[in-house]
Amino acid sequence: MEIYKMDYVISYTAAREDLAQVMTKVCEDQVVTHITRRNGGNCVLMSEEEYSSIMETLYLFGNPTNAARLEHSLAQAEQGEFVEVDL
Image 1 (cartoon, rainbow, N blue to C red):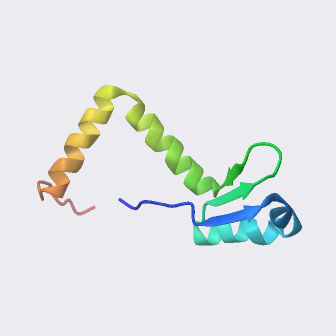
Image 2: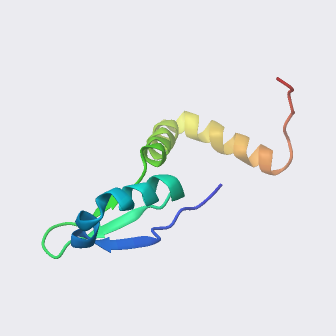
């Protein structure tokens, strides 16, 4: 499982000045971008693909029974307890 970090921080002004390039970097490089502001809350910009992945994970782990099954399956896979199937 990959762990993503907030590895790009940019000011609101800089983001506004070159928004197209910031969006391209976010989407092509899978860079989660933290946009800071002096007044008001900060924001995070991420690709739609990354957002969808996070939302799916939250949905799957939102049900305790489903979460337990997934965690059990992950533990089995880490121990090499799986069956390969050719499709």
